[in-house]
Figure 1 (cartoon, rainbow, N blue to C red):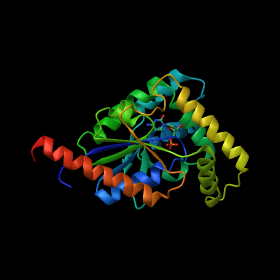
Figure 2: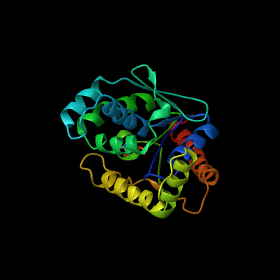
Figure 3: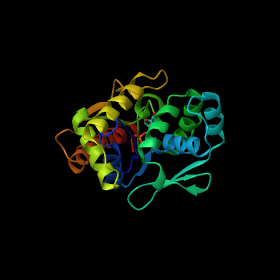
Length: 232
Ligand code: DC
């Protein structure tokens, strides 16, 4: 495809963003960027450095010192924090919690959003997160709001934990999903919202492959429209 788009995929926990965004990027030959991994890296660093999650100023200062690189990897992107590969450490329940706390702090979001813009501005990118279509790239060529029912999303999260050998009570996982939804949607800065011009894709009854193919079809349409308007 000649005209490389910026594709924003936002949605709540368990909506399948990562698998879908990665597959869309594969099918289009684009770069996949998981912005949530950056908030996870900051949450991880806070836990390692024993910075209190109740100290927004200290957390913001730490975030502006941190160097996060997202590198394409085999399957999942690799997350490098201050030169160290932390990909395998940032998907635990403890880091998920820390990430959602630090993500509510404006001084943490500013440097990360600036980095996300730098990484995606040339196009040919599928960036996933919570505020990509609303804040990071309000002029993205295609905005998708991916959603599924809380029960379906909790079921996926439970399965993910099980595959990692973390035994979990399904009701506790569902309560965790509600809790993270609440924090992501109610925070003052860049809450999870559906951008007015985002296309809602509810994939409660679709698998990741079907979902990705639907999005690729939309992307191909947008790219045609872009080549007509840009005259290329
Ligand atoms: O997508 P995820 O679960 O890996 O994201 C981790 C946390 O970071 C989650 O609490 C939401 C937050 N986040 C955010 O606030 N903005 C983004 N663009 C991406 C993630």
